[in-house]
Image 1 (tube, rainbow, N blue to C red):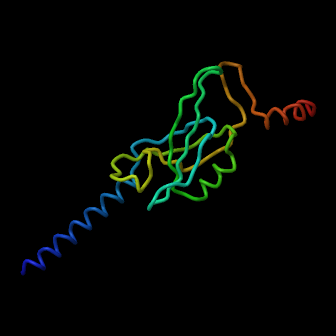
Image 2 (cartoon, rainbow, N blue to C red; image 1 turned 60 degrees about the vertical axis):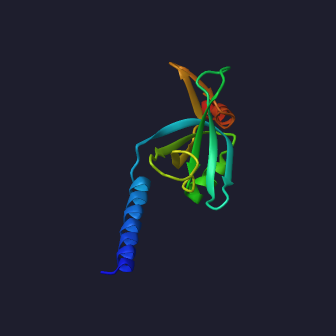
Image 3 (cartoon, rainbow, N blue to C red; image 1 turned 180 degrees about the horizontal axis):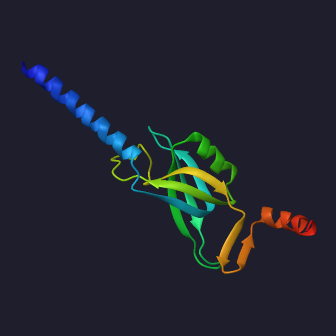
Length: 145
């Protein structure tokens, strides 16, 4: 076997190993969960690899400084759903991916795979704050009882 064919074989093996690594890193989730809050920033950005990057403001108690949850979205349908709900309280389902070597897959480790509009905010036992949409519909439902 010539030196050139050995080099080609080594490059082919390296390409297969890298492809398997990227597939495994994108398929396997280190963790998954839900975060609820208000999407306050969401944009499609990147020079070569465009990804949807966002910021969710998490509020544990009224009057406290909100913690921010930074996330990435790879699915355009999920990104469109998040865009429809900017400024409203949402619950984001995410998967945490570990070991992705570049920011081409996303700037964060948290990849959002689903979004759900959240109407009520539980603050404690028996204490619930309603969002404006839920508050507007509450008198109509209370009157019908």
